[in-house]
Image 1 (cartoon, rainbow, N blue to C red):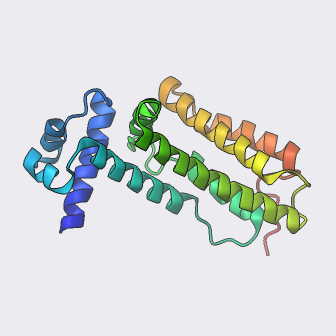
Image 2: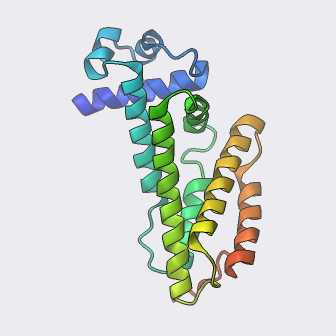
Length: 196
């Protein structure tokens, strides 16, 4: 029951962030959005920062689940990773990108937010670097620096999501550009893996 209540508070926080932005995020608005009292919210989260930290925890866990792949072939893992980051969970209804952009804008002023986004960035970079290193070891990718490719990929992904939220640019346009760039760096084309 407690986890359901926390989940309700987190979901209400997401909706308030999307509708009112970080500046308009108050415990009262979260209470109104969740049909809970501010006292009930404070029972679970002492401060707004603690609540937003829990919100970011959930974001990171959701993201890890989205980019995980049981495939052993590095080419399939790379495709699954790109699918995870470039395919919205529920197109046009998932407000997380807007909420996350709001929190990223606060990272220069809040060490906790900056640390959490560094954690998220590290997760992405490790996954990509591991995929690239495995692909090189198995002879699927050209010799290159896996860490540099990971940095390129994560920077492109961050830019793509910013452009999507701020400018309405479709994610698939950036994905296409990134795949072309990866072809140059890795000698890899999406779908090039042999189906057994």
